[in-house]
Length: 223
Length: 202
Image 1: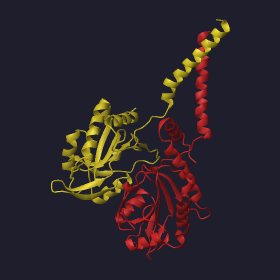
Image 2 (image 1 turned 135 degrees about the vertical axis):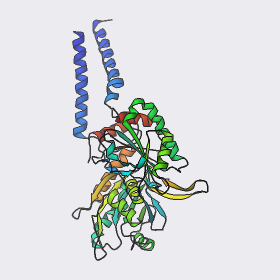
Image 3 (image 1 turned 180 degrees about the vertical axis):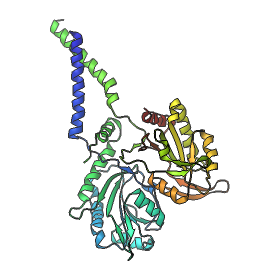
C-alpha cells in the first residue's frame, strides 16, 4: 500500500516537472536572441586614423552597418535606422554594458580618413560611441564578406552593389541579430526590442536566473 | 498524539523528503550544463580550415570529424599568453585521461612569416606530443582567423623577441560533428577546460 503511494507521489512530481518543461517551451516566459555565430575579428582604422580592432569593443554590445560614402538614396533607410537606434537606445536599461555603433566602409580607396571624418560629422558620430572605419581591401573582404556574410561588389561605374544589413553583436563577440533593411518598415523598433531582450539576458547571466536563460536558449525561445 | 496529527506529520515528512530528492538529485540533472565560456548554438558548421601541418601534411578541420577539436590562435615567439594556454590545455588532457584520444588540439599560427611547419611541430610537441600547429599563406590565415573572431596585428617587441603579435586569446571548441560550440576565455582554468571537454565527449 505504502509503496503504491510512493510510486503515485513520484509519478505526480515527474508529471509536474514534464508539464513545467512543456509550459516553458510553449509559453516562453523568457525570450532570448539566438547565438548565431562568431562575429569576425578585425583590424581597421577609424575616422581619426586610429587603429580600431574587434578587441576594442569586446564586452560592449555593437550594432554594425556596412556602406560606402558614395552611397546616396540606397543608404537613406540604413542611415536613418542607425540614427533612430542611436537616439533611442537610452530607452533600454543596459546596466553597466556599453552600446556602440560601428559603420564599416568597404571602399577604402575613396573613404580615406578625411572622408570618414566628414561622414562621421554628417551623422554627429563622436568617434567613440559611433565609429566609422575601413581597412585594407583584402582584409575587408575577409571581415565583411566571409565574417559578417554581407555581400558587396564594385560596379563598373565605381559604385557598389551591396546588401543593406545591420548586425547586432554581444559583448562576447557573438552575432545575435541580423537585419536586412526593410523598405516598408524601419528596423529600429525591432532592434530596440532586441536590445532590450539582450540587456535583460546580460543582467540575469549568473546564478539560477542564468540557468533559466540557458534553458530558454535550449528551447529556442526566440522573439 | 492523535492519529490525524500523526498522518499529517508523516505526510509532511514525505513531501519534504520528495522535495529534497527533486531539489538535490532530479533538478541538477535536468538543468542545462553550465559551461565556462560562451556557448554558440549555430546550425552552421564551423568555418573550414585547410592549412599546412607537420611533415608536409595538409590539415583540414574535416579530417577530425568524430573528434572534439580545440582551436587556438597563437604563435611560437609568443612570450606569455600562448605558452600559458597550451600548458593549461596539456593539463586538461591529463585530467580527462584516456578520453584525450578523442580530442585534437590545433594551434593556428598568426605569425606565418616566422612559424614554419617544422618550427610549429617542435614547439607544439614541447607541450604535448599530440598537439599540432598549422600555418599557411597570410591571406588564408587572415580569412580563417577573421571568421573565428580572432584579430591579430604585429607589435613592437625587443631585440630578444623580435616583433610581437597581439592577438585574441580565446580557445574554441568544435564538437565531433564539426560545429563550433564553445568559446573559452583566456582566464579559464585547466580544470574548467577539462570539465567542458568532458561534456562534449559524453
